[in-house]
Image (cartoon, rainbow, N blue to C red):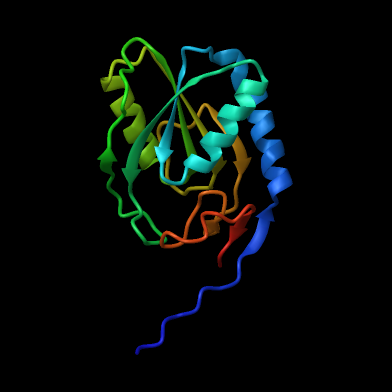
Length: 179
């Protein structure tokens, strides 16, 4: 059996308590811009942890948004984007004439968010807002920039809180660097 390279031990960058504070702050900032008819649309798979926490935090702010998901893939099991987006599962409900809040875990290349915005507009959304938990620095211009950003992340390979390494480490309660 061939040796496989070992995965470095993760370094905590943002603790579970700090994540909770970021999500609560985002909910306070977003609440004035959404209502109970707004559809919170999570980009799967990594955004699921964040979307679950944010929609509960919005509820504590008096906003009980609807929920849907769009499954996009651009990384596979790699640490860098393949540069193209694959739609693995479309939205399940009509977005016609609705406000949609797209939720994603991390904004790096901007490809997934741009594709989600395009798909959502083509589905007839009246308004599209975007929110990411983390935004990484990127050397090239990205469009669209998110409307709401929780945390300015370092340019490191992140795992935990939905972020993965080849499908693993998503369940870590903290956000960690794996480099």
